[in-house]
Length: 163
Image 1 (tube, one colour):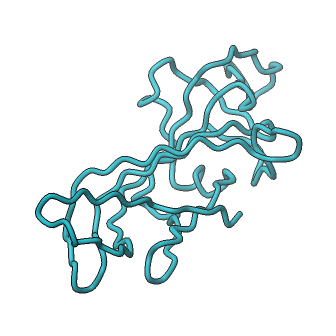
Image 2 (image 1 turned 60 degrees about the vertical axis):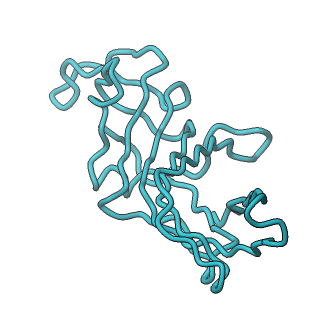
């Protein structure tokens, strides 16, 4: 489905890549006031476009446009660092990471030769690349318990970009 190895940049604002980050808490696994952490099961979804690559024969349903492990390894993926974890954990590129392409643009047919018969070509500049993965993370927290049991604790997952 993917053609052209290792693109350099994605949808740009000047020379910067625009990546949409969706972080959802699936469950609260553990809380330790004494050790000052909260452990969460998170689903992280990253979405971007990349004008350097194109895809063949995309379908309207996103679950039919699944990237193989080899294809995922050929697509540039941003690396995020979770700043408020003990070891500054980062996103992981492994077999648990799911990759998809969301068809949004129109296709053109490939020039006819033996290798491109009946292939629709979709430029990725018009179609979103989506990577999803579940993480179990321990986030460092300073709990304020002076008003317990009437308190409210709010915490942020601080992230930065490494790539």
